[in-house]
Amino acid sequence: ELLGMKQVHAEGRSAWLRGYGDYAVSTLKLTEAANAGIGRMSWRTVSTRALDRRVAAIEETGLGIGWTNGEHGRGPSFRFRDPDGHEMEVYYEEARYIAPVAHRSTLRNLPMKYPAHGVGVRRTDHVALMCSDVGKNREFMQRVLGFSLREQVVYEQGTREIGSWMSATP
Image (cartoon, rainbow, N blue to C red; front, side, top):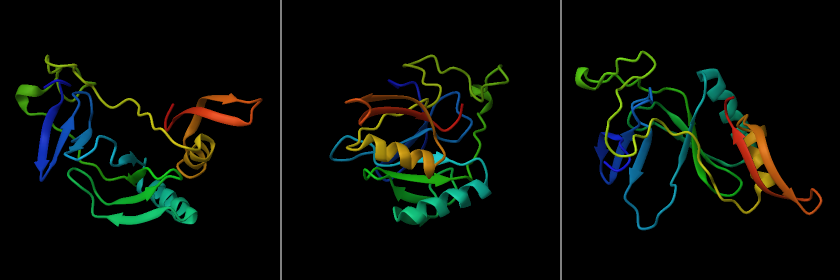
């Protein structure tokens, strides 16, 4: 209610939510836990071939955890950790959201109409992660996952990177 997201699935201690502008079945999975934090981040590849390439690159680093059968709305995923230990996964197969008639948008570029309550989250736009070695994680994201560097902050005459802003798409 607070975020204006719609719950689309619940299982165990988890709930899957979606923003009104997301074409996927879910945008965010929330799981009850003892401590706050991100449990896992998921990155969708552009094709099955791209998924195979990313998995091969991850396995070369020795940071791979292994395959899962997927979760609600998603096909198989390959889980891994980044150099700082954040758990992530890559996947390709994803169920497309089809809004019930009462929730359909009149706008062709939105799969669901604006919820008119809460913040009205449209989709997940970005995420910020803290890490102990920014440069090492940035290099991993660029080399292994294909992210592009957009901005960075470097101190001590270019020897200490303390921030990097990256994106998977333009």
